[in-house]
Amino acid sequence: MPETVPLPLDPRAVRLDATAAGRDDAILQCGRALLEVGAVEAPYLDAMLERERSISTYVGEGVAIPHGTLAAKDVVRHDAICVLRFPEGVDWDGERVAVCVGIAARGDGHVRLLSELAQILMDPGRARALREAAEVAEVVRLLQPIEEDQ
Image 1 (cartoon, rainbow, N blue to C red):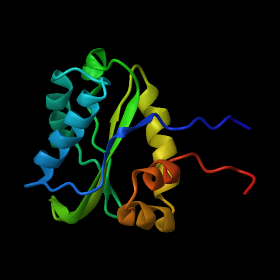
Image 2 (cartoon, rainbow, N blue to C red; image 1 turned 135 degrees about the vertical axis):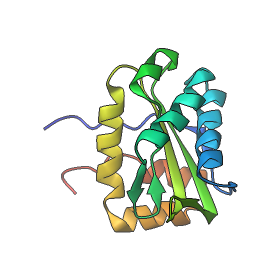
Image 3 (cartoon, one colour; image 1 turned 60 degrees about the vertical axis):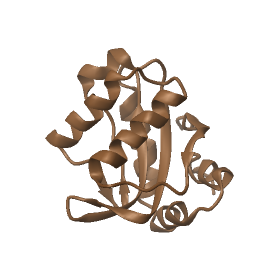
Image 4 (cartoon, rainbow, N blue to C red; image 1 turned 90 degrees about the horizontal axis):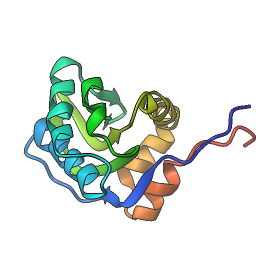
């Protein structure tokens, strides 16, 4: 059985009461959170917008997972995620997004991060709990890998 590894979430990259003017503003806020914890360099923010223009990062259950293009991996310093909760929601091309989980990964690390996030977020109960979380510690707990033996 593969070992589950905690997601690289710095509590400083969690914002529970964010507001955004729209999709691109929400994506840039995710990028800035990753920048503030030293995970990326500034050009990564443009790469996140470029990714969104090519394919939507909305995944359902009120969640989007914005991330940069493969070409931007050179400006990623270390793997990291951020979590921004938008209690009032953000219009994401006609979908309502309440939570953005931004990703930055070196190499092909984004594949593992996306896979682990998908496993967590495909559980409607966990996705709802994430949308409703009021404490940073609760967000961190909800984004830990699901243990197979439970």
